[in-house]
Image 1 (cartoon, one colour):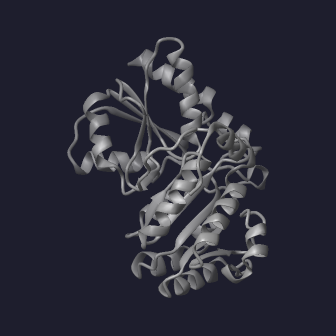
Image 2 (cartoon, one colour):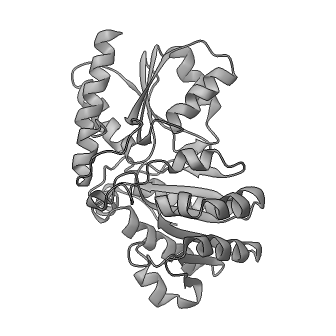
Length: 325
């Protein structure tokens, strides 16, 4: 097991999630020969160059053929290998959507499908490479767990938990080099159990992925002004932590959901569906993300800034709700 301290957390942040993913998976595969890494011609982009050289018998490149990636992964998973298969988010969720639906959803093959560069991490490659609908697609397929780790250390915890789950998992990696650090010491992580980073307040923020780090920075800035805002890291989008959600609904007047995803079918939608299905009369739920459009392309920082998903944008949105509340 890898230990964590501030130095390592910051080093992983500088490397970014794709490079760290390859490092973590190599460590896991050294310890367990049943761990396999598959890539749709993105070995280097997945941080798997060292893995492929050191453990070539545990690495497979399917080429630019994402449907085959899912099919081959499913066959290996049925043979009781612990399979981690990576490609960019839109190709995992949309190009291979039918294979994911049948092999992972319907047939329940325990593949860990790792969606690289979800959200806007690929910057100027544009909307063809942005992963902004993937949560909505995966939520609609029965039987698939969806996780979105907040930082690199939580990714490590997530990978280890997914390896032992023995059911299909969609692992959504957001952010790039220099991503925000959320965790600087070890903590208890469990798929399906949200992390309450700041106690629930009258206004509570819920986020997933790298957006959690930006929200944490915004909340800390507001604390310096004597303003307390709740913050929940909902790292598991499916299944939701209903216990934490009920706590939020009981105590909050406003729930603000920030995500690097379209507001259609994402975490915000899942929370509203939970409220409706459980006949909860409670807080106003505000959803922040991509509206129903394809956003103008720019580098990663530009995308977050223009959509109000960086720390400054999140803080401005929170302050507006506090004033209007």
